[in-house]
Image (cartoon, rainbow, N blue to C red; front, side, top):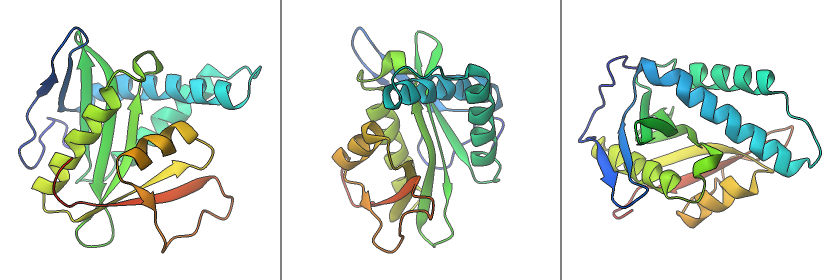
Length: 185
């Protein structure tokens, strides 16, 4: 990852106007800890919804989230976008080139649960699409937890669909989705 937040293509800070304005900007090394922390909160909320009565281990969620972001940002071409409200990172996305030419992988798109349903995820997704198209990518892939219906619904509503060339993981924990990057958002 570029530690100075450099990003190829025309990624400039953008804002959604209104009382709950959100700014999307390139992320940098200083954003890793806030991104991992909000990811941990999102995962804990997902786990509580999936397993009512369970007591998620916040330390385990923080450690797992940090490892996930470290892996996602390990490649030299990995890029991070951050969504801010009132100077606080409330969402983050990470993407990088995939093995197939012209394809990009969305490694992470996380929104703090306190901001679910407020347009943060949509704004991050739209910014990713703009970056991918500007970089000349023609397709995108991602892996989503099979049981995370909220995430699957989010991506399906934005045109993602199961990749017919990839079966679910042997342990059936993840589903690979793909998106053709034509015009429009």
